[in-house]
Length: 578
Image (cartoon, rainbow, N blue to C red; front, side, top):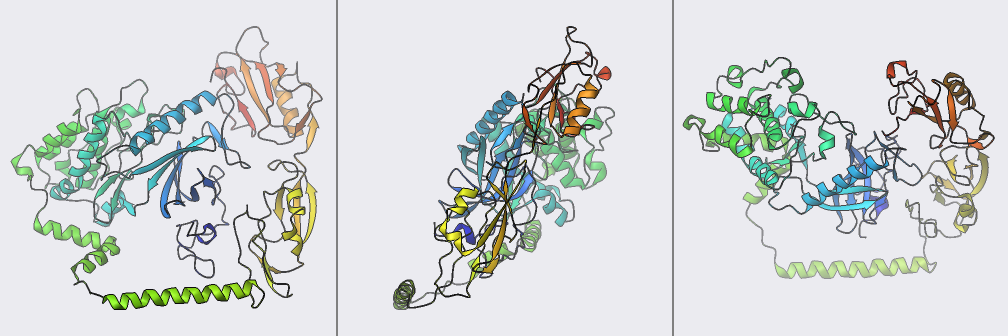
């Protein structure tokens, strides 16, 4: 790999300066969401994970780096936090107990969606998917890195609204892309100003793809609905979604673009439809365009415009709508706005307008020969250093898996050496590694619920700190979680059992049984036999408490709903079959 991982900024994947800093200001040591995979993790043996850029109920997107092609990418990871969590030690995504089938089914849908997008053609106006891989018990979709801004920001920067000719020029290519998607059996469901991006050329690009579960209110994942843009059928179970769903959303985006006003959200319109016609908000909008948008935003999908092609035809059916895509004056205005918001586009255009400067071939050959000569001199100088004829400062290797070549330096005293990252390594491996003999290591053992026995979980001197040889570093080593004997809870009331477990620090999960065979509010079984050693406060602990419950959730003191832990931290109520 030409660009070494340790020299990359995990905030923007640019090369760090000589001081190890980046102008983007990203702090790699800043706390991150526990659902995110740690930065610098390599997935698929190819892609380096950087900072999280966005998150929804189904997935997390990171900036990344493709080691094979030496380029930035976006990495979209399947991570439905409502039914799964991250294993902090391995980085794997693990479904919650009872959610295994849901997790696998949705993951299959996620893989199929992005694998199909990867193979799509004619996707100039979509954020391109370049690869889909499986790793860490999940799926990663890799997007090509393209510098864009959201259409919402682009619209705001241009005064909050466009004229009809401007909107037509922007959206017609996107309509063609949507028609292509629909003809291949795909419905986006999440079209909004945030899922449409604008590139440096001023072109709209569709992104924000997700499974149907992500864009439906009654779903196994946290839904990602956009007020004002999501269609009415997305708020109710049992209603068909199709091309007409995307028609509604894209018409709502046009409504906002032409009027500068956010449409009334679909859920409210089902109660009282008071959506104001676009032509009443902007007198420059023709009646035909206004009617086309209203027809495409009809609450009932049965009477709504059925396809993007039909919507396009209605928008363009009037001679007064001006079928010419863009006028000369408006073209100049948009070009000016693009150059203001994308300075690099202005520079690109200026360079194209300049006359190309011809460089003599003789001069080119001279420069190449000079570069080769300097390379030979640098190699010889480095060779003499290795043989001991010169001083060579130690190069810090931030790759935590490298242990043999990170701390090379000569035998002279007084040189600073860089502290490695000991956290996450096993004590016996650190003790047996001669490279670490340059430090005075002191090991302290403590109980820890998050790290396995023998693993280092803290160090007194921060990672990457430069210290003198012989510096004392205290390393805290996990001896595993504290354990207590499991009490006998059978026959106890639910209140007594949960109070005792909470007092002892044992995490547990409640499993109600609605059969009349079991006495209401009484524990009749436990998954861990009494006197068995149980880890204290271990969230991964598999302790299930079974009790008798009534069918009515109102009579159930714990609510009887899956995952209800609002009044009992560390407690999960599992509904059988859920």
